[in-house]
Length: 584
Image: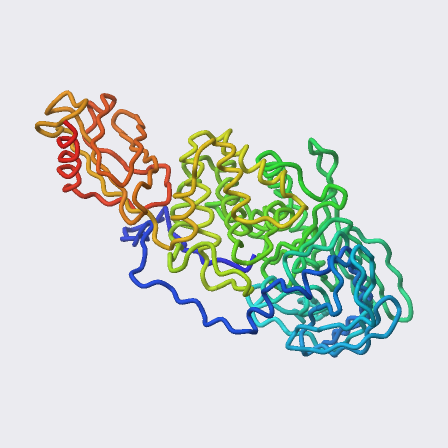
């Protein structure tokens, strides 16, 4: 999730008058943002070097002790992997503040060296490609504490209102190696994970998948959880606290889905009512995108000591049981549940493509608003709570191989969502648009990592058109298209081409700030006649005539909110007329 900044706009004032500053739409600042100076450490963390790429993890088996009083944790982690090449050294990751007590490969003690969080293991003999191995790591220590979760990640050592320990972890950009040894790269998702965690008596542990066992012994509680689905490394998680559990089920076209909720005792009655909306959220996404990806392990919300995080099958919930009127539901539930499809099932291999997680989840909010409040209200939601926060300081696709995500810039959320909305408007066929999303999901859910190019390929295949210029502008440049346009209901004297002459309504338009030859449709709405027309605008100024506008004195440009900056420029009328005249 990592969070977003919202601009709250009051649509209704109960009394009095006020002037409300409406944020500009699609404005690009004069100065671009500046990426940090990337260092060898950034490459160390972000690159998939030979020592990482040469093996594939298929199972993590964690047996850990959590000590709330000392704020420590540790234990044994068995990393099951298949060798892909004859490595003479392999790399795992573990933050430096966690101490490695010992390590074995295939039952034999091995040596290791450390460089920052990178741990290089030296097998006694080169690995044999195609063979399975188990690397056993014993470790302990105080994991990094979250400064501002989930934005500044780490382990959260909190307490509930009754003073009971309440613990969780959020580590999306920091990585799973913040709290356990692992191959900490987005490209390698284990096929399954088992977490066995021991905590003081009276506490419960919740994690991904399904609880396998709970044992109480000598003032300790041991919980074992197992997921048999692939899971990205930052979504492997745990929650520990004093919880009340309740459950529900829902019928889907693909079977019965179990719904489980773990909340603080004082919130039990409130949660039972508030979480009823989960069924509507999952039903909507299942219809629009495809089947809920983890049918065998259910959907789970776990109350957490921080706002939210999309941990697979165990979403962190901490937004205070409140709905947002302009959304029609609880923002955390709507957004984080969307990540079960976009981010958890369809996962990127590098943060440079993170808009495929966050942009899709944010657009899901708009689709939820459309389903609950109607299309027009969903446009208000997009206008004031998504588009209004876009900064346009950086391209949407960022630098690769350096584990970079500027979490102070929300464009991967907001601009990513508006890019999808613009695609929907261009396609101008909601059925086809959702076929694109459905195909993207079905081809990449719980499979290999996905890239921006994979999405572009599906868009082009489904529409039969070349989208290169569109994605170049919207993903790889920070500047957005600027539409110079002008409408003259009285026509233009001496108009050429198909114009019936002076007196016929005429529109002039061209794109600027885009590569030569860029073309994209624009919709124009006449409220007087309740008529919408669509014109295909390019970088060449052109005149457009439409008899449907014969009685229209004023046009509204871009009523459906494609993401570009419309500017009324009278000069483009004469500029386009000159082009038309030159063609005679």
